[in-house]
Image (cartoon, rainbow, N blue to C red):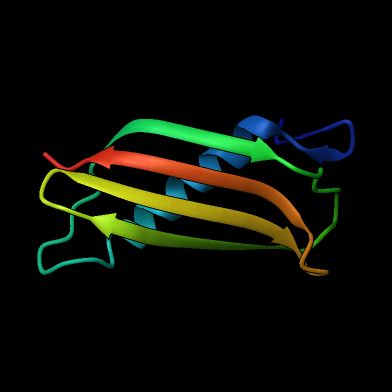
Amino acid sequence: SIVRGGTLHGGFSAHLVDSMTTLALLTVGDEPQPGVSVDMNLTYMKPARIGEETIIEARALKAGRTMAFLECEIRNKDDALLVKGSHTKFLG
C-alpha cells in the first residue's frame, strides 16, 4: 500500500523522486535519454498525510556527456518541505 499509518509510504516517495527527476532529465539536450540510476538519496522531513495536496518539483542541475545530476522536492500546499531528493544517473 502507498499509504501506511495515515501517511505516504517512503518507498512510494522514492518512486516519485525517481520518476519525476527522470522526466526532468528528458527535457534536457537535443537527444534526451532517461539514463540509468547510479545513486539516489532521500531525506524525509515531514510526513504527507492522507488527502493532503502535494506539489512535486524536479530539476536537472547538470546533464553532461555521461552523467546527470538531478534533484526533487515534494512539498505540501502550505510550502512545507516533505521530501528532499537527489538523483545521479549514468547516460550511456
